[in-house]
Length: 258
Image (cartoon, rainbow, N blue to C red; front, side):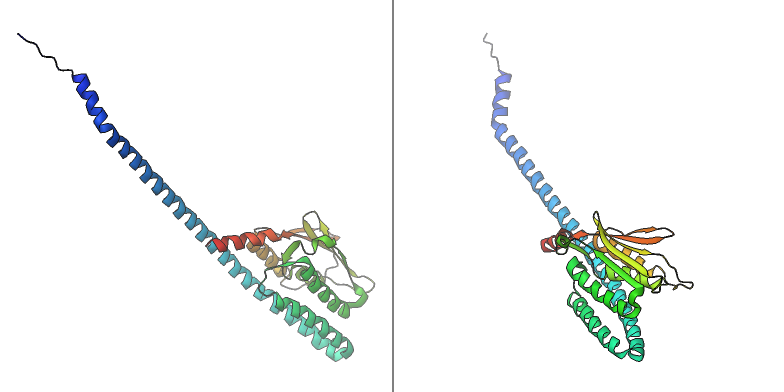
């Protein structure tokens, strides 16, 4: 009698060896497909994030444009009212006032597309505004500017921000030559501060804080910052953040990627 033995272990090993390449190919193929889907998912996610960021920027710019549409007409209306009065009472002074107003408007119109201005341009408009007010109030109004020259072209603020704060101080205080209104604009840390002594009018305007609310909204829209208000019995002070040009460049980079 002859006995035959079958080596099942060898047969199983041969089978595994035959199918091993197919198995590895399947694993590699699955991994490649997984990586491709992962990359596609990440690209789609990035695109959605960029689109959302663009929508936020567009919305912010629309809000800022709407707020700016309030600021300039409001200023022009007040200036024309003053000019009308000066023409009746002091024609030569009215002529000087018109020249300052034209300088102010020329620069403001030239920068209509800019939500932020460098300090040099903002201060130029601010100085024109101060001279216009000095023609009205004379020695009853004193304004001191203490801003380092090296900041003039490296830092920015929202357009009309300083003019608005000056207007706010003038509008809501009573002052004479004997009891002048003193306003000081200076750098404090990363901020510009605008400080005035308090001499409140007996009857104040109904929109006491509308200008400050407008400026606060503009800061939040432009750079997600806010103004800081400090008030005592003696003085009223507003801090506005000095902004770097990089903040605006970041917006432009996002736009260029879309």
